[in-house]
Length: 437
Image 1: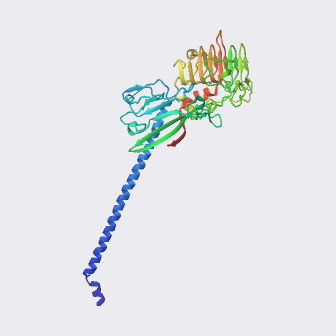
Image 2 (image 1 turned 180 degrees about the horizontal axis):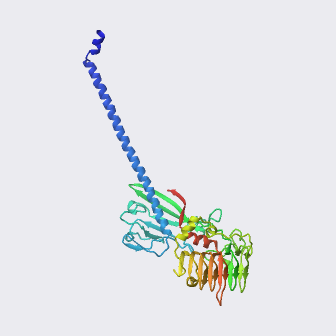
Image 3 (image 1 turned 135 degrees about the horizontal axis):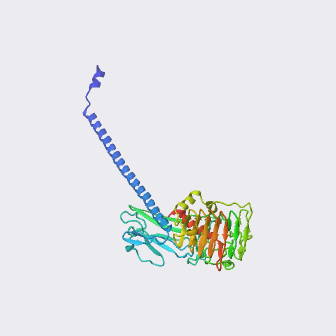
């Protein structure tokens, strides 16, 4: 009976007070815990927002570099109209005669709001529409413009950019970075901002490199008939060899230092076949290293992409994006000329001047004062008549016939730089190095 009475007994006032205090303590703890969770959640949201802005600022900065790359891949002379102004969006220096001090600054501003150049640099506006542009190179946000300039090393420590201090990239050399041959390396410095988060990138870019597997100034899968007044030289010539220069006037422009470094400077024979004769006549003048001709049956004739060290997808891109499809498209050509069929008769190359690559799936005929820097690849026969000057190489799967009449002549000088730079330029740019500042 006493046990039952104890269980049914109503708590006293002292015990009610203890329960109330306990409840208040629990409520206070829950309140503190809730406030802590709120503060923690708010901090996490802020961290997430900051991280998002930080990441987006990087994407914006990369977009600025991509604008520079896309504009450096453009040929000068094609205008665009953006933000009420019409201008040429192409960016770049003359690869044949580069200016060591070349510098371009890109601003996120319409043309009418650009600052005046402080020196010899070129000031250009963005090609973005102001309605929704990304904030890179935005001076109103306290950012520096996007800057593009040649990579250089001050070899003589005089603080002045000299031509022999510009850094180049040649995939045919080891190490590939050097001061003598290959494509110039460009340095792009860009900064972008999103909601106060700022990023800055320094990227090194260059034209996609060509691995030159060409074995002669004139390569033919069949016989070569070199009649008339032809000048063909397999020694490696500089890209700035003057037009119409031929043997012996081309000697000062050979990269082999008076023919003492032919092996290291990639000098080649003048003519190569895969076992057929190389016939000469008239007043042909043919020189090369270690001799003027190589007609061994062991020589292998390759496809165009194999000669250039390209993947088939890269070659397909070249053929899928030609600048010209006929010899009649333009008197001055710069880029890719892809003739699907014969380039004879009305399609004969006559008086054309250009640089890059000519690819003909049929037969080709060259007349008149024809000039070309780069590579010519012909699947059929090639007949060169009149006056023609080629710096680079010519490759013919059929028969190569060079005839000259009257005072005309044909000159073919091998130049690795003419091939790697003029042909490589049509493939666009790639990023060589990238780091955040």
